[in-house]
Image (cartoon, rainbow over all chains, first blue to last red; front, side, top):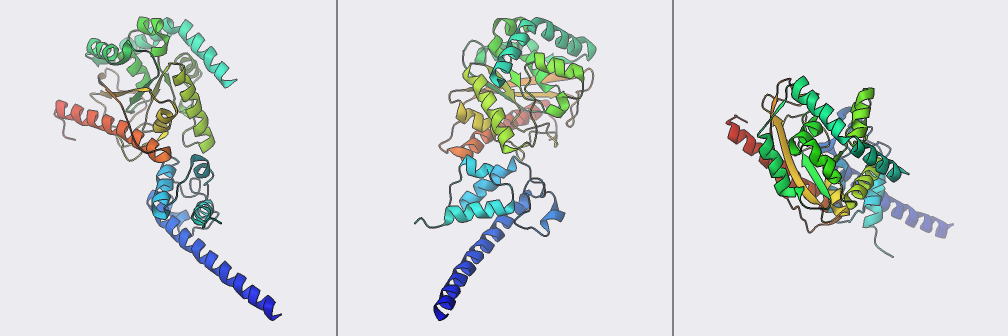
Length: 104
Length: 246
């Protein structure tokens, strides 16, 4: 029971760290996207499901600028295919977490 | 299948080029009373800069009205030259919504080698268009493109709203010649559907060789920004020459 609790505590700590990373990435994503947002109303309560083009009114051509800003901010390289998969704020965070995760 | 469609469109367009050109030029010249300032010089300049060479050609232009591509083709060469050199008569990429508005626009668009595009489309749609354009260029065709991605809402070359597709095209077809074309009517104050009747246009050409050490999206952006930067310079020069307060 104790071992289980310990493992659970460890997992919880890991999950918490992961959540913090995710939360930090989300905050940075928000700050990077902010200058490109046209629909300010939808940007007041952003969630992972918020669609960058449809909900926030970001010009699709500006998505490239946003992706390049991610590269600069997080020190990652984003190929065209990965960039094309970024539709929501959650997709952006997910991609950043994947690319910044240490290689095993 | 799409490539077959483009081949058919090219053949039909070429077969009717003299008729199409004459009809559209007559509408502009006599119906709308448009004029090109220094028409002969502009055409000589076009020949001097790209006309005698073979190979892919990307004509990159500023964009203020729905018929810019028509006026530009008229300004760049007479119909007979397009009839002799089919690759010089440029494909262009109008907004699908604009082209669909009237049946005769669709006809003129087809004969005028238009490939309708969905503005603000999905990445997949953008990729398909880039693939089509790249394929045409690899066949030595000319393509006219507006790097601003639409008519400039600010009435000037809008360097803040550049689409980078033009850069991706250049990456896909290395060696493509790039001709920047600046066109503006003397009375054009902002963007519009059509120029004012009786408008006189100024057209300026400059061939450039965009280059970058970057790859991928960053490289595409570099290339696109060099082209739009050139168009912006040409616009500045135009206003300086005209003595207009910008």
